[in-house]
Image 1 (cartoon, rainbow, N blue to C red):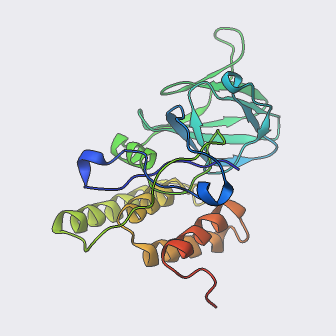
Image 2: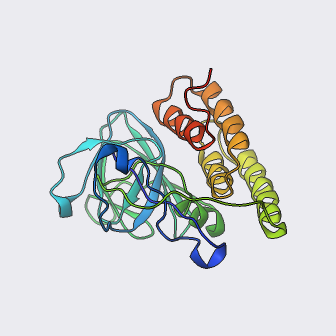
Length: 237
C-alpha cells in the first residue's frame, strides 16, 4: 500500500509542507524523502498498470485517487481507461487503451511514432483547484511505498478560514455542475479543503454521498475510515 504526505501548521506560508503521518507508524515504515507528486489519478477502469523505472519497480495495478510522480509509466490494455489531473497545469487527461504513456511534469507522453501516438481527451481545470489538491491533507495512495509527516491539530476557525471554506464550497459546486457524475475530481478537491480545516462531519457527509454512487469502493471506504479515525468515531456503532 502506498500513501502520501499532508500539511499543517500556520495558514498559507506553510500550506504545502509535508505534514501528516498517514499510518506509517502503524505500518512500521520509516519516513524517507520522496520525489514530488505531479498528478492524481481521478478515474481508472480495467486492468491498468503502472511502474517507476527509477525505483526498478515491477508493474502494479493502478489505484483510484493515486498520486503520480514525474516519470511514472502506465500501460492500458484495450478495455482500460485512465484519467490524470496534473497539479501544476490543471490539465485533466482521459486516456483510452490500448496505450502506454509516461507522466511528465504538466502532461503525459504516449509511446508511438511522432504524429501517430494516441492522444487523450483533455480538459483544463482552474490551476487554483488542481494545486490545492496537491497539498490536500488526505491519506491518498502514492506511487511509492514511503510515508512521512506529523499529525496536525487546529484551533477554532478564523474569519479567513471561514471565507476560504465558503469559496471552496462555491468552487466545488461549480465544478460539480461541469463534471460527469462518475468523475469525483470536484469531491476530491473539496474533501482536501475540508480536511485542511478538520471539517470531518462535512467530509463524512460527502463521502457517504460518493459511496452511495459507488457502494463498497475500497478507496472511498479507506478515506471514510480515515475521517472516522481523525474525528474519534472509529469503532463506534
